[in-house]
Amino acid sequence: MRIQSQAWLARILSALGAFAAGRRHGEEALRLATLAGHGNTPIIAHAGLGHLYLAQGDLEHAIRVLEQGLALCRASGNRASFLPIAADLSYAAALQGRLVEGRALYQLGVVKAHAAPPDTEQAAAHYRQALALADALGMRPLQAHCHRGLGTLYAQRGRWEQGHTELSTALTMYRTMDMTFWLPETEAALAQVKEG
Image 1 (tube, one colour):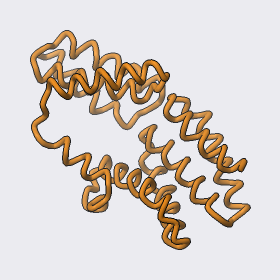
Image 2 (cartoon, rainbow, N blue to C red; image 1 turned 180 degrees about the vertical axis):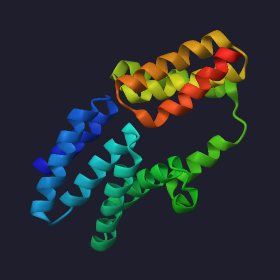
Image 3 (tube, rainbow, N blue to C red; image 1 turned 45 degrees about the horizontal axis):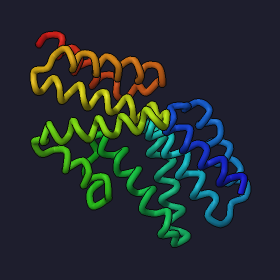
Image 4 (cartoon, rainbow, N blue to C red; image 1 turned 90 degrees about the vertical axis):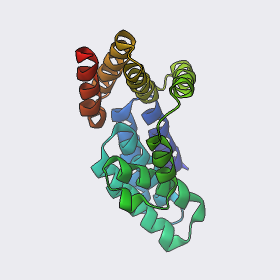
């Protein structure tokens, strides 16, 4: 039970942007699960820590831990944990540009859905709704992603001042939480807004 609690705490803390604290709990869960070495606890520990790494944008560590968790699922026949781990692994692969590795898995559908020309009004409404929920729940990584999405949409629509505000907020949040994966993309989008 302690291992599961540690793993879930890592996942919850990642949603709040408390990555350092979450990592400590996730690594402890993995250490304890490795010592125990039986049942579903090693799978749960890999899933929790892998999800945290993915949320922070530490793709190298996320992929390594999630691949180990997926291998454990296959070896044990654990189908319940297979899909969530495969989804996170696919998303990490897609973020790295390794779309071929993520094919036929859940997140690839999400990535392709976003590749089509977006309905900017509907997309903005969804971002605002997600941001309101993220604000209420203190889910800082999700808040940063919503600000980046809104800023990009505003820039596409020629609303430069609003785009600048949203992208600046996202950039500050990413830096504060050490979510470095999203910094270059957000900095580039902000530079384009300043030129606009």
